[in-house]
Length: 192
Image (cartoon, rainbow, N blue to C red; front, side, top):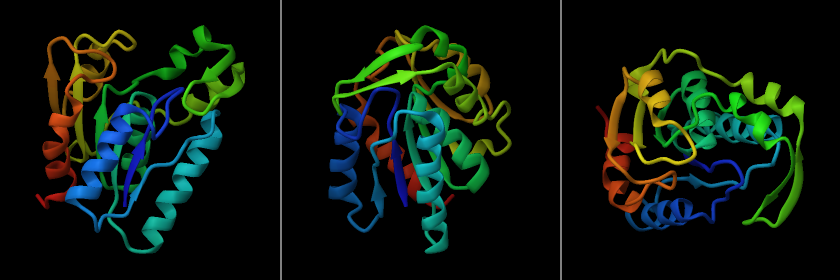
């Protein structure tokens, strides 16, 4: 199973989500590609993700993850705890440190959902932290230094032992993501 995990206030219908789905459908039609819309709260999101992973493992499927931003944070946790390989795109490293600025009403433009970020959500997301990477060979980290949302240097520090691509400029959406798809799939699907 290849599990695409979108970021905060995002969706499988984001540009990266659509590009990924089309590429996988064209080049790897036999892959079980799963791209859920995550619930708004961290605990509910991780419950959905772990359920999908455990179902895949029960079917004997290999695991692969692509996680963007907060989805990269979740993908780190899943790859460390369940195995498989993960590609992290401008991943959040310590999202619990950013939650205070998002407390209160939120709106997801993709789902048109209004919801609340509460103080307890900060604690929920913190429990999925992976302070140290125990299995660096499982990770490919794609970063752009022009990320206006997250400080890419945090990811450089955390994932320094992992395979990493750092591009100057760009932004949080990862400009030119579609050109990375062949390398992403090589990392995820080729036995090494």
